[in-house]
Image 1: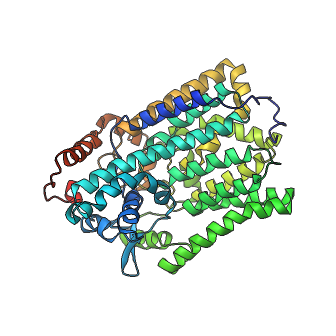
Image 2: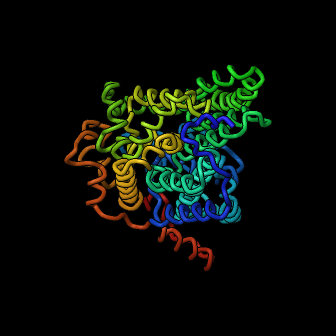
Image 3: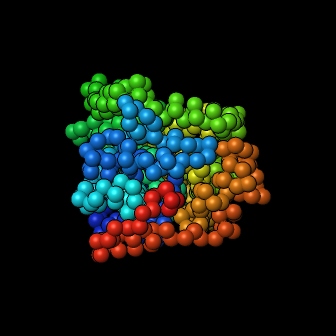
Length: 478
C-alpha cells in the first residue's frame, strides 16, 4: 500500500457499513434542519437546468429563467445566464446540474403534465426548485462526506475516520455553503474526496490511475481554476510509468474535449462564457476593485469576514499536517497533491474577487476541504500526546461548529453583512473590519425564517387539491 511509509502507523482494517451509514443520515438531517434554502443568483442555472432537460429536453433556459430576467435589478443583472444562438443558456459549467438531474425526475414528470401556466412561471416552480436545490445540495455534501470517510478508512482506524468525517461535515463550510445551495463548491468537494479515495487504492490494482484521472476530470469540468491540480499529479504518474500516465490523462482528454466542444459551440470560446461575461459586467458596474496579492493572500487566511483560519480555526493544524506530510513524503503521492493545493490557493490569490462575492466565509477554498481534513492525519498522534494540542483541536472545532450554525441558520446574503451598509464588492476594505464582522452581524440579526416550510406547504396544497395557484410569479415572491 502507498501509505505503508507513514511513520505514525495509523493503518487499520476497512470500514464497517453501519456506523458510516448512520453518520451520513445524521449529516443529511442536520443539513436540512434549518428548513431554508439560502438564495443565491449563482445557483439559478443549476437549480433550473434539470427541469429544462427533463421537461423541455433542451439546454436552453428561456421559459424557466424568464422570471429572473424580468425581475433582474441592481449592478449584477443576470450574470448567471447569457444569450447564445438566440436563447438563454447557463454562464456556468454544467456538471453540477447534470449530476443532480436524476433527482429531479419525480417533480419534472409532474410538471410535464401540468398546464403551461404552472409549468414555467409560477409559485409552484419556485417552490419546487427551492426544495430540489436544498435536497440536491445536501445530498452532494453527504456523498462527499461518505467518500472522504472511505478514503480515511484506508489509512486510519474507524473511530479516527468518523471523527475527521464529523469535522468535515459539521465544522467546515461543507455545512454552511455546500449543503445549502448548488454552488460549484458542492461538486468540487465531491471531486477531491473521490480523488483521495482513488489515490488510496492499491497502485497495482486495475484502473488505479484511470480512477484518479476521472476524479480530476470532474474537478476541472466543474471549476476550471481547479485544473492546476492536474499538473503535479501528471508528473507523479509520468514518473511511475507511461502506461499509468496515459490512463490518467485519458478521462481528462475526453472530458476536456467535450467541455471545449460545448463551450466553442455555444460561446465561441473553448473556456466558456462566464470569465469574459462576468469581467465585462463587473467592470461596467465599477465592481470588484482589484486588490494586491498580499491582501488576497492574507485575506484568504485571516480576514475576519472571509479567512479560512477564522471560520475554521482547526485548519491551522491541517496546515501543520501538510507541512509534516511534505517533509516525510507521506503516502507517496502526498507532495504532488499538496503542490496542487498550493497552486489552487495561489490562483485565488491572484483572482480579483478573492473573497467570492456574497457568501458566508471562504467559499473559494471550500472545494479543498476534503484535503485539509485528510492532512490532519499526520499530526493526530502529536495532538493525542499533548494536552494543549488536544484542547486546541477541541476548542477550534467547537468554534467552527458554532460558526457553521450561524451560517446555516442566521446568515442571509441580501439582508445582512454582504449588502449593507455598502456591498462588499464595492468596498472590499470591509473584509478587514474587526468591529463589524460577517459572523457577528449575522448572529446579532437572529435566525432567518425557515422559507422552505411555506414552499412545502404550497406544494402539498396543489398536490392535494389540484388547484391552480394565484397568478403571482416567482419574481414577485422574491
